[in-house]
Image 1 (cartoon, rainbow, N blue to C red):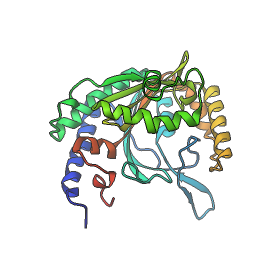
Image 2: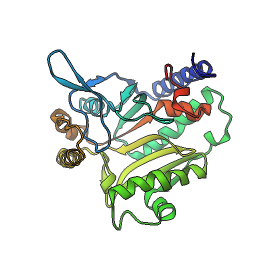
Image 3: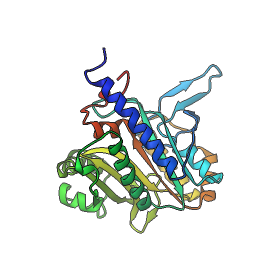
Image 4: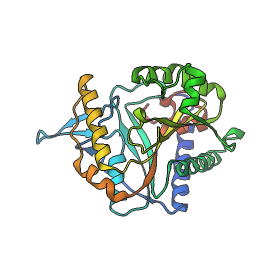
Length: 294
């Protein structure tokens, strides 16, 4: 039997998804669909994709994100695109995680991460209105806090003076995110250290990246996209070396993705967890309460 209230929540989820599509359609975006089964995931240090071995013995992977494939569409000439679909990550299960989850991603050529922050704020208001979420905080302007301010205030150190990856990750989970949750409502955590740039463009000593939290629940991760083939190849190489040290799967590099980057010019994009967005808008306490089948 489904958990109490699941059927009502699934009806609200459907309204939220309809509102998401209506929002992007009204803004002139094109909805796209890219492969779920891919040959070369982005090699990120702590993100593992389930492997699938076909009858031809070839190993492919269930995507953790459609990012690489969507950027290829930008390089081919598309300007405003979005996608809703399933993504997968190994070893992630809990009240806020599920091995299979639904991702929303959108990209805009010629935009930056601040433009996408404005998009996200308007989308959040539209989705809240669709399900009658009466919390006035959904219509209020979200707080903006830099990563440097957050770590100085809540973790007691400055990652720009002596970056330590393990300490950064642990303090994010145990100190910074709980403190952001205590602030209540929406918070954009902005401008990351260059060591945590991932696929984001670097400006000076910061990566143009933000993450959005609602009552401490991370909903979105945004970059002004790195469109430099050489720098992205170097970052992938460092990530592959880190994965090897940790004993994680060695993913092949997507050479077509690297080659397409200069063709994009400039762009920004964001990944939003739809399951978590539904949690925020309905007050559901666990991800199992917003997904059919748990």
